[in-house]
Image (tube, rainbow, N blue to C red; front, side, top):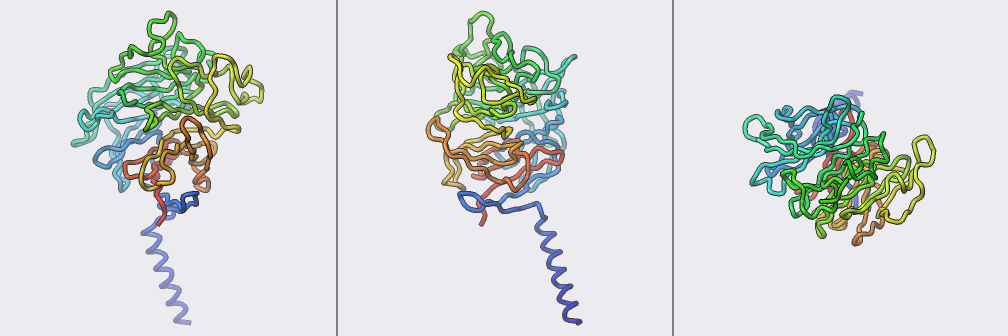
Length: 381
């Protein structure tokens, strides 16, 4: 009897030690076509993280939708809220959204961030640039709003707000239709439901498709979009790829070309939340077809092309976060065609808000929750 008691005590002690060294949610193993995946929690306890970017020193710059930008270390330590942010409209879907480093960040410390900017009767999408000061207490300096969306204001829905910088240094910014104004996505006299393209100082490139056209905004690159919350530059072609939310069904991936109309709300593959028909049809002359669509919706958010070394079988694949689908979606790309789809990490049961391919070859994710996390996905040993 004494041996049994001592044995039980030893087993309990070992389990206690193991539980201290390896918290239940710190690392988990999931199956995939490339073998088992290890999912490690790097940062926890952050409120609705929306985006992350990798600093040259290995730390992570991240945004929280309620209006905080912070820096995290690889061992999960978080800085205080960075001073210098403009006022943010943190209502509904609005708040502080995407953040990216300038392609010459190592020389100029410049970042770009997108947010819902409050006005008297609502909010609009805005894009700002700033210098990130990392010495002493991290903060933002020389903050300047370089673009403000024009059109009917949002009460808290469909801000879009993903940023991508192309190899020529120009910036793409996605914008939604604000929910209540779907037909404005077809109106070239405002920015709702558009992708815009501007220079890093906010000026308009001369080769934008609507420059000099009466009744059209010169910043507009493409139009007929609903609510685009994913944008990435193809590493070989330099083209912008993006995805957008449909209503009930009809989430899309598009490769937006200059001056093209992507159809919302005239054509599409979804229905209204009420179950009523929204679109005239799925096709119409003068309107583009998506390269991929989902019915039912997965609620896509964040996207990244993978070109790292940890998953050689997945090089060139496109990864998309799914919030309603609660998965990481892997898409095989052949030129400008989307092929096989694999849904990963569904057992995780998390809404994936952002996806980034890290400089370490890992896939990095942000989960959409009041106690959100930054996750690092690597091959399991």
